[in-house]
Image (cartoon, rainbow, N blue to C red; front, side, top):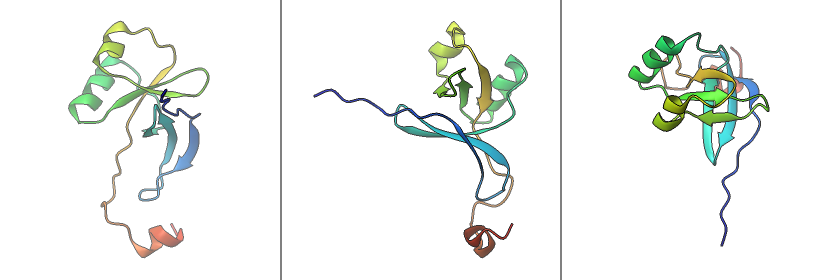
Length: 102
């Protein structure tokens, strides 16, 4: 039986906790949530990785592709590099988060 992991086109949305704009997609069946602002250089990607934030390439066809060690080293994917989103607010949802008052 062939198994294919679903990948979807990135969509702009807002983080339900901190309300910052993010891009969301499925990459080979795994959810990806990244900051909309691309990382400007390799040093920024290294800083994100040291901060335990995964990085993704946003391709021309709007797919987010996880950058593992091989993909980072090969540097063959074309597109912008984005860091996994992390909230700046507490992780516990409030009633306002749930009803969208913020």
